[in-house]
Image (cartoon, rainbow, N blue to C red):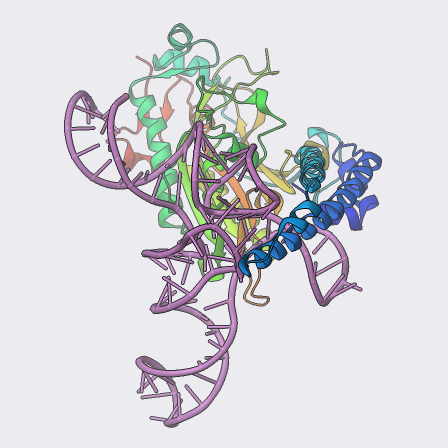
Length: 426
RNA sequence: GGAGAGGUGGCUGAGCGGUCGAAAGCGGCGGUCUUGAAAACCGUUGACCCGUAAGGGUCCGGGGGUUCGAAUCCCUCCCUCUCCGCCA
């Protein structure tokens, strides 16, 4: 949620910045509604003030044992007027909130202007795009040859966009998770946290999935109102909802391993082949809750932590900064890490690291006590995948294959693989 | 699933329907004392909204109701705890 005060004080600039990411703000009706809100609020508060004063007066008179009847008569029809004003204020407030909840975050000044992914800017490239010297297979063919990647069975069990992984390849998938969790907890100072995989609507609203993107989510039937998480970002960020954090406890750095569930509505036919785009996948997520002045440093660090996973695995990748038009709803700035997939001869997103500044913090009322002012102020939130485990598995398979379809296990994973250093087709 | 108890400020915990944003204690902050610290003593200490300010308003788990007036009464939902049953 962007700051209503900012809209009031610098409307034109807000409109311009939102425009740069392709959002058209109806400034006219927003201003009108805001003016209305103020008017109704002032009137309501006046009435409340009068009510409070007369109630107090009546109390005094009664306590003194005098007759309160004249005073009571004076406020006889007061209630309706007040109730009506309060109801109207409530209604205006809700409409205002509805609009505010729909407005995306403002892009940071350093974000390149652009319309879509074609305008993203490559910042760096790590590792040579491997020249394998033979025609590389994609992970689907490699997995089939190994007999360890089974889309048909998963389709039977559940439907399309699911996978069953078996044997040592499933072990490799698990090894990747373990490796990532250990790296972030042991080397980079993140606290491991285990969280619910289902959350309530309030949490989804807090991180920005709701109200706008409900169709991307899986909602659980029943009257409890649960949603399956599309990313650990949702439960982990909501840890600090409605909290005022002591400055000494910042930054908070969490790492969580969770499954993620996405409906992928509107992506029919897109990435239909393979396990690039699934309804269910595993992810290791980094979340940092930081002082506002630290959030851009935190974004760089967190991105480096995600990159480190790939470097240690020896996988080549590049980092791009998303342009204004390609960023997610809640982000002020986003780096995507893209892995090279020989089977597709292209880069694919394997991590997305974003600074949300105070956008999520405002929605979840996550604050810290600024020692300079003594007052609660909004924190900044930063998060990123480190990494999407399924796509990392795909990357290992495709980048570490040889001509006969064998997969070499990266050195750093071997301690997790019970001595297996290569996967071979049977 | 059955039976009961309870949700109040950072924490513990009081609170006859009126002067209660809320006693008291702890904690925090400032001060006195001290070479320094501790102890003791004094003072101070919730969040949010509108307003330049003065000031006004809202908040005692959420929502609704009764009332001139609700932390206090009623309804409803949520959560926590205890006992019984079931169970990974």
